Length: 297
Picture 1 (tube, rainbow, N blue to C red):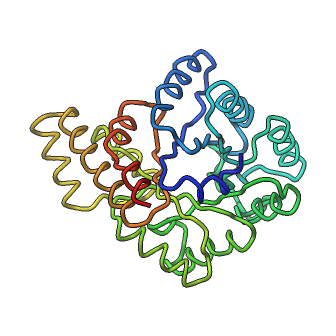
Picture 2 (tube, helix red, strand yellow):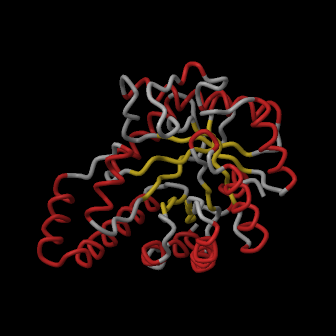
Picture 3 (spheres, rainbow, N blue to C red):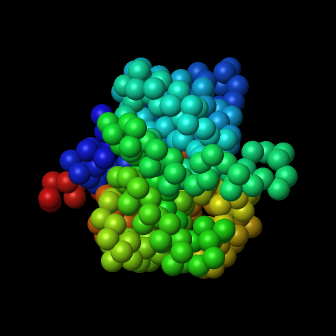
């Protein structure tokens, strides 16, 4: 089913993000996690896509099995890096054959080991180019885009970042999923500013549950998101006094509170970055008051 049709019918919701394990011998454990997380009744699960199409086949196979064997509606990531019209057509036709109707179009990161990679020399330079391509040639597909409540590190300004995201909507994006963030004020301000620009599509906030101080700092170094000072100090103090177990407890408390505030404030759902682990997402999902809001509405 098309996720953009499901969002209006089943908000508020939980959705999930997975990345394809590189080695096939890790797949049984991966699908065990997928099965465990079915408890949360996710509206959809996105499956990431390697730079330059490095894990394209894995993305397709995992998404197919997720839908066929586990009953979870998949969204496949699709990047412009290394893409050509033929490669996009080949991938999208395979999605059609697998009855997968949802794509999250991204620019993607430079291929590993390639110095001075020039995005301007790509056939598809931006995510907007991929969104436009899919929207015109595969109108049955529900296409989404990425959004950045904290501006993308390559953006010259907040306004230019908003304009680029607004262009994604104009080119055909039917929903947006945000990069992770920890200050809900950024999200609500971002959504309001997009609305003022004419973008009325659902903006799904991305939530990263912090499970250890080391992993948190590593992940944040990759995406550029900032942890509020008081929260970071509390995490560091927790680590000093109780190690990773204390950090995990504090991280879950923060993620649950952040997610509930987003839902109560009108976010259509929360998108949990699973890191291919079940426990943290289950701890968050079991503590969210989603059903109560659905009953009130």
